[in-house]
Length: 152
Length: 152
Length: 152
Image (cartoon, rainbow over all chains, first blue to last red):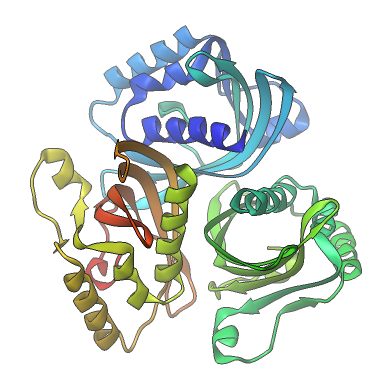
């Protein structure tokens, strides 16, 4: 199970880090939930995600917007994860959590920590392999100016 | 073996990074050694750990102190490891080494590299799974002001 | 396959991060290609590697030079990888890519992100295990002053 989850996590990092955004929505189920939430809101039980997509079409629309908008600047991201924990809900459903870190190299060539936080995931087994039915991104880092720009 | 070691490393990161410090001592044996040592001391063969605990009770006491002391500030940590190497000593004992990095997000919301270094571990198989009989934390980073605050 | 590749990646990080440079060339085949290339050159299809070694003897010479040159300063590196993807070319040959990050702790004890980027590898199965027949290091980070100093 660990290896199967690691495989989909690595695919996720691969498409985001090598500028193949168009493949990102295909790692989710059609009825998915994807949201990005500040840790302090999550801890306080206050529902105020900065991004909230509740189906894969919204993810695809997001990619199109990003491609149209980001014509001047194209930062490079590198995703790293650790501390994977998981629990089987049934034979085809798993809940998982892990820590993440994203590095960002901007136009000036400097590499910085862009964001750290935690993923809370629910994955289901499909014919194409494990897919995210839910990925909640709960970020620690508050100094995030360009948060809306890219998927985490 | 790799997967079994990875599992306990991930548990270790999980409890420290998600504020479940109370579970941290349970990943050690009762007769454990846990110490934190500057790399230059280790390289010079000088025994001067900044933290030295030689049983699990000391780890539990440490957690209690941290809970009592750290009422004003609660930084968030994220642990990452790499370069795992191991050697079986016997059927139920393994020696392992790996590199680590810890990120820290403080009250102001900025995420920084808190510390990097190397773990030198000895693990034994117990009924509850692999447990640390020894974890020596040998840190590279010398600009660590709050080193005494938290387990690494 | 993932576990076998992870093993050689971990060995690679281990020798570089724990100052055992002399073992680094042994992770390559004798007829290897090792090169370091800025991402913008790679993306533009312009062949201008800042380092280009096309056999293992050049790697060994490089290690000797480093040992002779770097007598005053000895930074500590920590390598981390993620997003591993691979494709079997035949039973004994694999092409792989992954993201990397290297941390650097200098003489002053501060730990910084030294470099991030992507590995593009070709590995072959040998009697000694999987070895790099090709490792292309394509770096994102442009503010790299001491790039020539150490292997990535």
